[in-house]
Length: 249
Image (tube, rainbow, N blue to C red; front, side):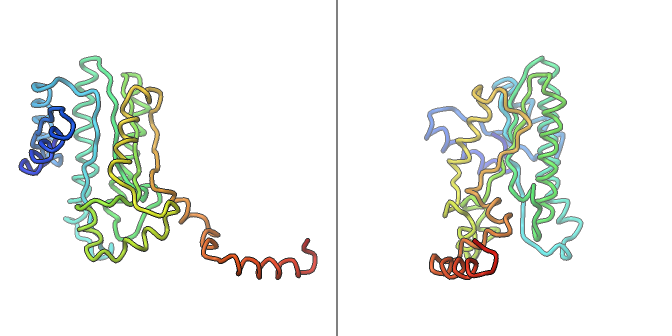
């Protein structure tokens, strides 16, 4: 497990070790720096050898009208999300090829990597790039025994994300209102799918982008989906009107 802030990383590693009984190694790494990534992989190899599972979850985001974005704001997000994922993936992947070993790669993106979204343009563009990276390498490096898949989570209530993107909490209710499942997702649900995708049970799954959002995407995409707000009484009136129209049956 790697992260830029070692104190936060060590605390998380200790929590996971306590909960699971498995030893978790904490390695400090700034994924924006390719040299730091190479040093991180060196340390990983020394501790445990080349990994057979790599999960890219580097993320950075903030909400802003696009006309207010600076070049630095754009670079800050894309350096973490897209470049960081690419540096880690390429560094590990090249070493795996040299050693003749395969591995399962998994990236965590977002549903708006596919649909696009206003006010989070750097993140949307970077996450979309991550998805294209994974699909491209699934095609190119599959011959080396490597698999690449993507999970697109919908709204997941985590302390970090919600404190930055919904500091007042006013949008949570509206988000739930457009999710057919009627609730936000949980980190555990994402973890369950991730565990499957990197396991041998998914050995023939590669190049897949799996949306996991409680039905939010399809609910927002259909132009007639707002009709779910129509009451049974209103439907009865509408049906009577339709049946009363000449030529209807």
